[in-house]
Length: 289
Image (tube, rainbow, N blue to C red; front, side, top):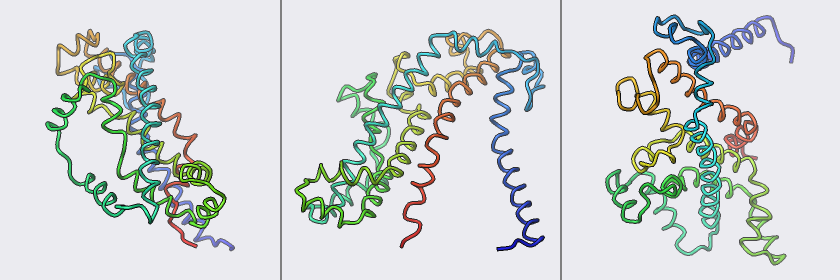
């Protein structure tokens, strides 16, 4: 296809519009980065926009030199890995049996599981339940209650439905049972879907702090996002500000920005490695042959 002059102009317009959107999306992140690298005095005077003013790495030295921040980041990374593995295992084990037409009660289980997407007991009953089973202030409270997303399970089940049933039948003719069929056929063919859902779970756990805020009082088990939440609210709380070690408003603002970057960069580094699987996973089923 030969592009005309009008078509080329249209391509440039679209490319320029996309670049503008990228810049608008990156502007908040660039502002936070500039604030984290600026001096406390420049922040107090509101001189920082997109470039650092009074370049200073003191905030990063303070964050990286404080065991509280480094342990919180390490704990959040471990928690993210554990939660992702547990959630993916639960998602696969829940979605795979529901693909069998001969499963007794399959329609009931499908309906019952989907109802949990629309109705929940609420925060207070959940708190009382976790208290009764002794999960409050237990690290497992950050893993077990949110170990399965019904929405992600439905995506996984839909992907399993798309795998030709003839492959399962041929495996059964060769003597393979359900577990062997899952491990040998379904999982190897589900790489993009597994990577996509793993990314969803990992990002959700990395960014999550509400469960730790409500159900966890032990500071050593605070994820990085809850620590960041406390820092961002330190301006209006003298007690929290003292606990977090702030001595001046300017230093507080610099540390806020540095901690935001400290909590954001790791997940931004991981995402490009899974991007190709993510794109493949979210477009699965868009075109039917």
